[in-house]
Amino acid sequence: MSKTIPINKNDYIDVEFEDLTHDGAGVAKIDGYPIFVPNGLPGEKAKIKVIKVNKGYSFGRLIEIYEESKDRVNAPCPIYNECGGCQLQHLSYEGQLRAKEKQVRDVLTRIGKLENVKVHPTLGMEEPWRYRNKAQVPVGEREGGLIAGFYQKRSHEIIDMQACLIQQEINDKVVQAVKEICERLGISAYDEQRHKGTLRHIMARHGLVTGEVMVVIVTRTQDLPHKNQIIEEIISRIDGVKSIIQNVNSRKTNVILGNETKVLWGEEVIYDYIGNVKFAISSRSFYQVNPEQTKVLYETALQYADLTGEENVIDAYCGIGTISLFLAQKAKKVYGVEIVPEAIEDANRNAMLNDISNVEFAVGEAEVVIPKWYKEGVTAEVLVVDPPRKGCDEALLQTIIDMKPKKVVYVSCNPATLARDLRILEDGGYKTVEVQPVDMFPHTTHCEAVAKLILK
Image (cartoon, rainbow, N blue to C red):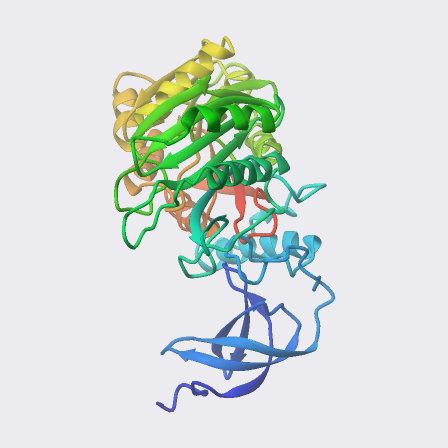
C-alpha cells in the first residue's frame, strides 16, 4: 500500500467513532483517513475489521464495541440487520433528530459556505412508528411457497416479512392477505432471472384520515388467474377496501409499475386529507408517505411564505398540487408547474375537489414555463420550490435570480443539494434567514428541510 494510506485490508483496529455519514454509517479516522462502519455511533470505542480500502476512504465491519453510546438502543424490528429499509433503528429517536439537525448544519457550512444561518432543532413525531401510508413489496418464491418483503441490503434477495414497523398496520395486513390468497390459489411469483411467473409486487395505499384502502396487484401477465375469487377474498378480509387494481408490467425492469392499469373492483382512486385539503390518490399518484409530518412540513412552508392574501405565488415542481393548494388558502393566486402530465391532471382534480379556484397549473419544465409566464406579465412575490433529490435545475435558479421574488421558500428532501442551491441563490442576491429540518422518515437517514430566503 502507498505510504499515505495508514491501514490495510483485513487489519483489525481499535477506533473511536466521531460522526455519522449521510447514510448512517459511523465515521472513524486514522491519521485523518476516514473509515466508514455500518452500525457504529458517534462517541463509541470499538474494534473493527477493515474490509475495503480506497484512495480517499475505506469501509470496515464492526467486531466489538468497548464503549457504547448513551444513544444506542436495541432495534425493535426482528429483521433490522438483514433488511435495507431502515438505517437508524439502533440510534434513539432523540439521537436521530439531533443527527439530522447536525447533518443539515454541516452541509450548509461545508457545501453552502453559509456560516450564520439559524438551523432549528428537527421537528420529529410523537409516535415515530407505523407512519408509512404506502407499501410496495416484491414477491418471490421459496420452497414452493410465496414470500413477500423488502430486499436485503445491497442485494435482490427478498427477506420474507410478516410486519414492517414503519408501515401502517393495515398495509401489512393487505400484503399478508394477498400473499396468502395467491399462494392458496397457486399463483406463481415473478422470477426476474427467467422473466417468468405472474405476481411481481403487492402494493397497498391507505388514507390515514378517511380509512380508505387501495390494493394494487402488479403482474407480468395480462391475465390474473382466479381474479374473481381474489377480489371476493380481499373484500372479505380487509376492512375499508375501496379500490382493487391490477397493474400490468411485462417489461424486464426493476421499475415497479407498468404502463397499463385496470380497475378490477371499486373506484379508481381513494381519498385522504392533509390538514383540511382533500386529495384523490390513484395507484400512480405521487402522494407523501407520511401525511402527519407532511402537514408539519407544509405548515412550516406556509409560515415562511408569510402570506397576507395579496401575493401571487409560484410553486415550481408542484406535483399533484399538495403545497399549491395549501398556499392557495392564504394567497391571492398560486401558479403551479410540473413536468409530469398525470400529476397536473391530479392537481386540477384536487383543486376542483376542494373548490379552490385561485390556482392555475401548467405542464412543463419549471425553467421553461416560469420565464414564459414572466414575459406574459405574471410576477410572484413568493416563489416555492420542492425539487427532487437532485435539487433545482440551474436554469430555474437563474430564473429566480432574474425574476427577483421578495421571498423564496425552498422545501428540500436532500440537505446536500439544498446547501449547493442556497449558495447559488445567495450569490444571486438572496439571504438565507433560517432552515427548519423536519423528520418525515423516522429510523431512516432521509432528512427533509424548509429554508426561508429573502431578497437582500
